[in-house]
Amino acid sequence: QVQLVESGGGLVQAGGSLRLSCAASSRTFSSYAMGWFRQAPGKERVFVAVISKSGGSTNYADSVKGRFTISRDNAKNTGYLQMNSLKAEDTAVYYCAASSFGFLPRRLIEYNYWGQGTQVTVSS
Image 1 (cartoon, one colour):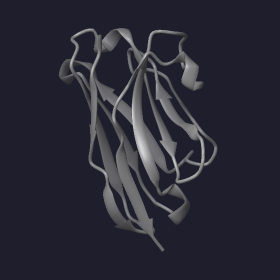
Image 2 (cartoon, helix red, strand yellow):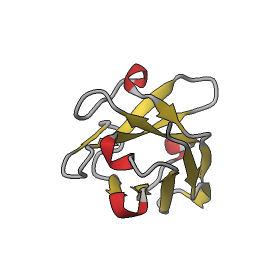
Image 3 (tube, helix red, strand yellow):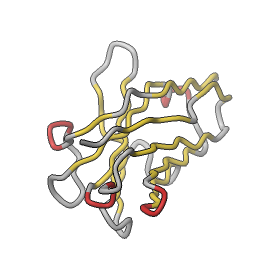
Image 4 (cartoon, helix red, strand yellow):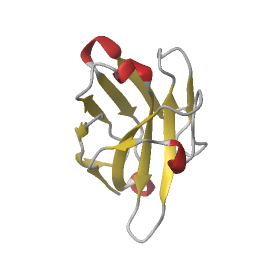
């Protein structure tokens, strides 16, 4: 069982930056790929970024490529999402998730554990 807790969300102006954190309860955190997803009001939850178990490989949605950076510190059982050049369309609840399926999973169904989410609001 892995419990995930996100933090770092908030209100920021367009063009600004935020860093989200995802703290995992389990020392087996390094056994899971970690992903970030987001869900805007009235829309489906969608993939944002994923990082492999070791942290050596990453993959991003086209909409955030070049602006967001996913990372992890397995010694601290924590993952991160650095978000730069934020746009109004990045406004959403952001969720971190852990997956024991695949190398760089992008689908919701491939994730075993989810955090409760953190709100990110970008004002234009």
